Amino acid sequence: MESESYARAISTELTQIISALEKIGCKVYTIEASDLASEANAPTSLNMVILGAYAALSSLITVDSLRKALHEALSKRFLEANTGAFDKGYYAMKKLL
Image (cartoon, rainbow, N blue to C red; front, top):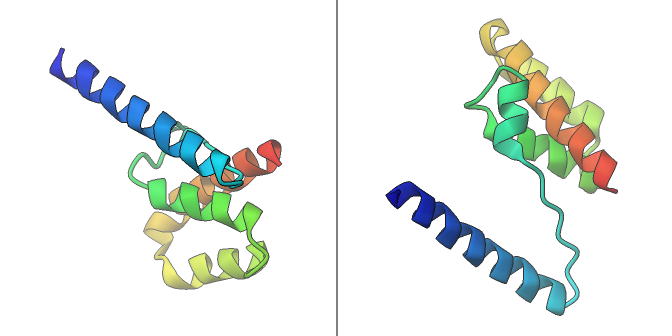
């Protein structure tokens, strides 16, 4: 029961933050990063989901450059799960744009 009240409190705070950002003209996008990481069979790879979502939004670095960096930085053991999580975040954000 305690976790439910905590989740409601967090949800209320996030809603307030999103509302405040929108009031000052910010565009806010939300994705279910935890669910997407789980779908990619990489539940601990939330960071890769968020990186993929950022790649869809940003023009600072290309998606191909990020994918190349992942291939260079990650061992084969972690590559498939992390690139899968990256792609889940990327395509989820692309659907919102």
